Image 1 (spheres, one colour):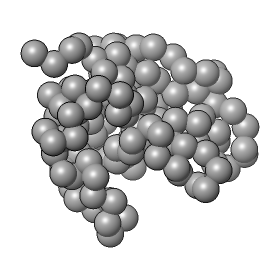
Image 2: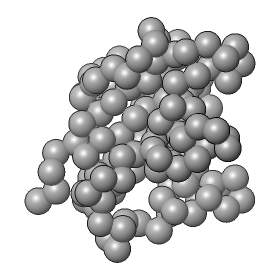
Image 3: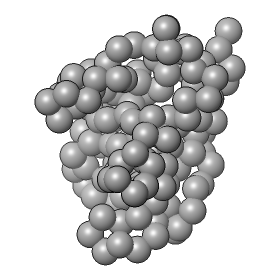
Length: 135
């Protein structure tokens, strides 16, 4: 994906990347996580990871979420559970969600960290999904 933050809808992400049974399963977990975050007031999710590549069988997805406006009291505790390699998040959603402004590596927050290829160090793209206001 070209460098930068690219806007997309959930429907566009599903159409483009949920193209096999495995990818549909991963996307269903992502959708469940997005729905839970949206209910807590989240307005933007940034999608990263092998799910948004051409890899035939991506391991999972990585996402970070904008905490601006999120009601932490209504947020499912699994989004704050980073224990055991984020085992509970992976079990619940088939991927991982991080607060976008949480330090990722001691230098960068996740929103910036996700925009660098961990193997080459080159800048890469991620997807931003704007969510509706909670009702």
